[in-house]
Image (cartoon, rainbow, N blue to C red):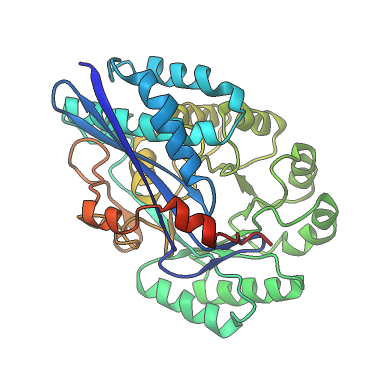
Length: 378
């Protein structure tokens, strides 16, 4: 079997509901989709994404550099394909090259599933047939009131969710604490609340504020500090009992390993698109297992569902409000948790079927982007 063609396109569209956290307001989600075609007629679909910025750059990287590298290779040699792309692009550092590699790598694994007539989760281990999900929202608008968030939590409960993640990092930590305690009252003793700071705190902030959150019974504190400050994470982990979750801003197994070796992370949240695809994600999942840590991948709900059902140390599936392919209206057939339980599609490969017309309607227009882009970083 040989790869004979790689086709790519980029799309840009807003989340289906407004997104704003402690450090950023999101105007657009950018996706790069690829089709990898083989000489047997099997076509694999892959994808990657960015938040607000970089989609056109990743598209160019895939089309101009990565695609020519894999033409003629056997998709069954997924390690060889991944290594060839990584070696050639490593001088770019970490980030954009991993995102580009991910799109092709995911397509290769989709081909493997179709070749062996198995859904992806069975191909990578088949550890379980379903996974519990938590709801994850991105709401940090100044106008968002306590009554607003409590009303949304009631709605999540009505859909079967008993685990919820909210954004924190308001100027007055007492507002965060009030929201936490009131939501926990609604969730009850069998519920679980996670909080996400999106790297808002400095090391000084963590020393001052972390003690206020510790002891509240939170499931985890996510990305409390800049991902580049490993020492601050180590100090925070030693100072509190509440677990720390992170990984969405890490782009390689070596970065994850450093956090594991330092004892600075409790839940590993490697994002399959940011980390370089399924080949690298699996190495990280098994690495976390060696250290006795569960994995709870960031975003990419429809694909993370397959990954979590494939590995033994899976924790929960993140369903980000307004950000799944299903909610964005990009799928032919919706994939979403029912009663807060995700069940992967049984069809071969990753089972994600995109609506070509829907993608065409939101194709990224570089000229329009240049005229309108302002960014939402705070």
